[in-house]
Amino acid sequence: MVNSRGPSKGCQRCKKMKMKCSQEQPTYRRCEKAGHDCVYPSAFDRLHRDQNTAVKLLATKKWRQRARPKPAEPPYQDLGETLCTRAYRRFCFDFVIPFPGTMSNVPELMMTVDTESCLASAVAAVAYANYFSRYRSYEASEASSVCYGRTLQWLATLMTNPVELQREGVPLVVVLLAIYETMASSVRDGSWITTCKGPSRFLHIETASLTRMMANISLFCVYICILLQRRKDTTLISRRLDPQRSISIDHKHRLAILMLRTVRVITRLRENIPVDQRVASELLQPALDLDLELEAWTTELTPAWSSTTQHPFSHDNRPQWSRALLAGPGGPRSMICYPGALAAGDWNTYRATRIRLNLAIIDFLSRLPAASLEYHILKTHITKLLASLASEIACVFPYALSLSADGTSDPPSSADIPGMRAYLQLWPLLTAFICCQRHLDQGDEWVDRERWFKGVLWFLRDSMCLAKVQALLDETGTV
Image 1 (cartoon, rainbow, N blue to C red):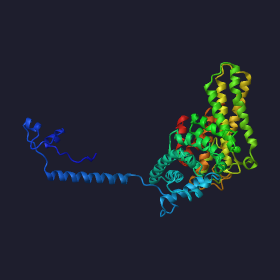
Image 2: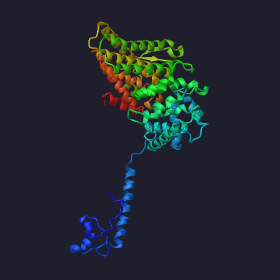
Image 3: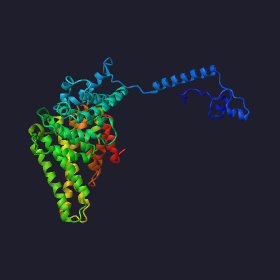
Image 4: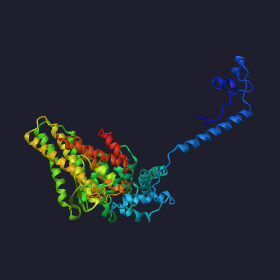
C-alpha cells in the first residue's frame, strides 16, 4: 500500500527499528543514551522520497481508473447525445408510453416545471437508475443516487405545505420514488415517505385537478405498501380510502379498498388462535365474506376492462429469449388477452389478492384442533380455486409483456419490453410463486408451475432490472 502521508522525517535508527521518533535535533535522546549515532536524512533524500511517493500515488490512481469496467452503451443510440437525453428517452419508453392516464402527464408537466423542482428531480432519478440498469452506465448510477436523495429532501419539505401538495405533478413523485426503489434497492423495505407519509397525504387531497388521477394513485399506493410488506402503514392509508368520501369510486379505487381490507383480515387470522368451532367460525366468516366481495368486483367492471379473449399458445416462431421464458413444464398453454396492459395488471392484482386471502384461510383451518367435515370440503374447494388463480396469472403474463400467442410479433429482445409492464406484474407473479411453493396437493403440476414462476422472477430481476426481486426471493428461501 502506498504511504499517502509522505515519508517519515525521523532519524535512520528509529526508522530501522520502526519506532516513533521525536525528531529532536541535533541528537535524539534515545540514540544518545544507547550510544548510537543519530543521523537524519538530508534535504535531498527527503525531496527524492516525496517525489517517489507522488509518482506512486499517481500511478495507483491511473491503474484503478483503467481497471474500472467501462459502461456498455447500446449500439443503436447516438453517442453524440447527452446522457440526460438518452436516459429521459428510455424513461419515456419504459414508463410513460405503457401507463396512460397517470404517467402520460409527465412529458407535459416537465415542460412547465423548473428543472430544479421536486418532480424534475424524481424523473431524473428514475431515468438515470433505469438507464444504469439497462446499459450499466456508472455515470448514470451516480447521478440517480444524487437525484434520489435530493427528491426525498424536497418531498419532505413539500409535506409541510398543503398548497404545494395540490399541484398536479406532485403525487407523481411518490409513484416515481416507488419505481426507483424497486429498481435500485435489493432490500425488502422502502423509505417511510414513499410507503406511508406520501401516499396518505396525497390520498387526502380532493381538489378537482387531482380527482381524475386519484383512483390510479390510490391503487398504486396500496400496491406499494403490500409489495414492501408495510402492514403498519396500510392502517394509515386505509383512513384516506374511506368509501364514504366525496371522490367518485371507480373499479381501481374499489380494488384498493378491498386490498387494504384483505391485509387487515389476514393479520387478524394470523394473530388469533381458534380454541373451538364457535370462535373459529366468528374469525373465518369475515374472510369468506370478503372473498365473495372480491369475486363480485369482477362483475362491476365495464366492458372496456372486463372483456377477455383466450388464444392457444405456440412457440415455433418465437425468438430465443421468449421461447426460453415461456416454454417448458409449468408454462402457460394459452394466453388471456385484455383491452390493455393496465387492465391485465388490475386483473392479476385482483387474483393475487384473492390468493393471499385464501392462503391465510387455509393456514387458519390447519390450526384448528379438530376440523369438521365442512371445513375439509372448504379446504378442498380453496385448493382448486388457488390452482385456477395461479394458472390464470401465468396465462395473462405473456400478454402483459406485449408478447403474441403465436410468437410472430414478439419483441426481438427483452430490452424492447417497457419496464412498467414488468413492474405491474411483480407482485402477482410473486404471490403465485408462493402459492405454488405450498404444494397443496400431490400433483406434479404444482412443482412444475413453481419452477416456472421462479424462472420468470429471475427474468424480472436479471433482464427487466428489478433489483427488489432478489429480496423477495430471499424471503421465500429461493436462491
